Length: 373
Ligand SMILES: Nc1ncnc2c1ncn2[C@@H]1O[C@H](COP(=O)(O)OP(=O)(O)O)[C@@H](O)[C@H]1O
Ligand SMILES: [Mg+2]
Image (cartoon, rainbow, N blue to C red):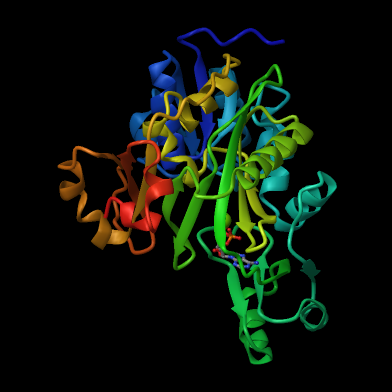
């Protein structure tokens, strides 16, 4: 048992993006200071931090000084090198630890870990050569999805293979990076479940969320997901099992495919706040960022206490972002903008959550009609 961090303590955050920004804001509400470590100056998290280090994740002096300046370390970016946490862990508590980071940043380790923990996944093969790709396609069939095992996000580093003629171009684009071939899952819906696990091992889960993607980027999250109660319970059970088998302290998010027969297949996990949990900050008494900070700081973890249904829309790219004024005028919409200097295409610039009376999602003929935009 570790005593809770007293107010006034400093939480170190590796990564400068919007997840760190919203974590730092939640930490400030409990009287904590945040020290953000990231390679980019003026990043979204640094704008709201009490202290900042702009340095590469590999800089040993900067990491040693960071460890000495903070009381606990967490990360908001899942591609922080594992070696960075290896260096920090002997100096300062890291929550979550390097084991969760390592698994979460490699699709092959992730798939093996899901299988070992008894969480079902679709068929997959590691692909280490062009011949291995042919063999994997022969075994799994087409369509299939070829992905880089590391550093993929928002659909980057992926190719859908529909016919044998697609293999050469996909190989040319993605190799020589390590690859994985996944059977294409004809899902009915995509859902995610998020849990928070404390230093004492206590776990709380959020309502399961349905996620709709546009061009492989999350577009809408709908909560609670309109799925059967057994499906929701199975999704929550899966993320808890994974968090427990990693002995993770912090948040764990699990993305899953729901098949037409009601089975769930795990897709990928993230040991950090997750885009599909953004609705929780406005529709729950304790949102994902609040529970993340509480877990990392060793505080008790209350039940989230959802008081509204919610539909979250990501503001991706300049055109949607340009409608921020319209969204700011809506009494039923909570608007969050990330302070990014460049409104580039494909970039997540903010999100808007429409709050609805409980039961609205289940009653809607099609929940995306409830989107804020
Ligand atoms: N094996 C698959 N079968 C069907 N759709 C997939 C598959 N893998 C990925 N997708 C689609 O692409 C999206 C992004 O893929 P994902 O593996 O979650 O990578 P990332 O979120 O890191 O970009 C998924 O949410 C899903 O819509
Ligand atoms: Mg994903």
